[in-house]
Amino acid sequence: MSDATSDRLEVGATIGIIGGGQLGRMLAMAAARLGYHTLVLDPAVGCPAGQVCDGQIVADYDNVGALAELAQRCDAVTYEFENVPVPGVMKLLERVPVRPGPGPLEISQDRIAEKDFLNQIGLPTAPYRTVDDQAEITHALEAVGGRGILKTRRLGYDGKGQLRIDDGATPAADAFAQLGSVPLVMEGFVEFEREISVIGGRAVDGSIACFDPAHNVHRAGILSTSTVPCGLAESVIDHAKVLTTRLLSELEYVGVLGLELFVLSDGSLLANEFAPRVHNSGHWTELGCTPSQFELHIRAVAGLPVVNPVRHLDVLMTNLIGDDVEHLDELLNDPTAMVHLYGKAEIRHGRKMGHVTQTL
Ligand code: AMP
Image (cartoon, rainbow, N blue to C red; front, top):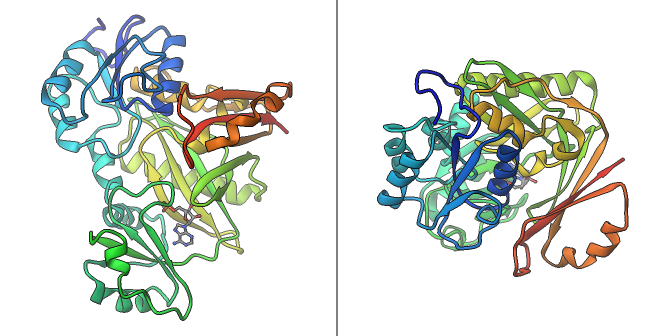
């Protein structure tokens, strides 16, 4: 057990991780390297993180008994996905530090709250309007400039829960129903030059560190590759880091987050969204940086120093999605490639099975 009067966890302390996917797995591996135990809460037996941590509580994320057990057995708790139920986190907080806290979760779970917040703190976004029924779609489309993307306010990921509405096209009469008849947001379509993301971290003492931005390419709404350096001018890179620093400090954040940005042709930046967790577009840091995003997050959660990462290499990260993993031998024969598999037994279309990081 750690000293309750200090923010710093002693070696041998236990960090709870809510969510047992690949991000939880890589967090557990980083925690082990720093001498910590990990306990994962996830309903799926044999989940990716469950295979590498010290223990797993097999239960739903809002199971009151399971959360009480997590609080009792852990010295600090973190999470690996943004849809963790906030009431459970509030309950946990009565007994154990939760880093990052419930604030960033609440904001990032609702696209409107997120865009309102980003704009309030001076991170511009595309224009947006709420859409609560089919009748509001046409007006919202006009208000954002005639081209837009309609997204569910909550629970969207990897391009799911989105409908693109192109120039001049009349919105489908059933667009609202197609997206599940739930509250939506209409976003103006951004003609971006490229997409980048910055992974940044903030310590308990408020110190902040940012990684170099990655240039991200999506395929069918899913991240395909991240490349660092991102190919932009130093002034744009610096600006992206300034925005990330502001976000971390305004949220009074503890841990690592990922900020996704659209880069316009004049080099200006619009915020798309942020994820209050380690991020797929930061996997390159495993090979290219000390510390990696996973270690930086664990350092922040454990109250250890958060240092500015040093990049040693130029890196290309490629996600292995669905049957991409069938080309494994080719990758294993490439000495510049670091292969990382997530331990998912069943290959499914669109499922992230692993990733490979290569020096450029
Ligand atoms: P999201 O789930 O919001 O991250 O969106 C997934 C992907 O869709 C983004 O990474 C972009 O490639 C694209 N996208 C999202 N919003 C917009 C937008 N307003 N304009 C243009 N492309 C977008």
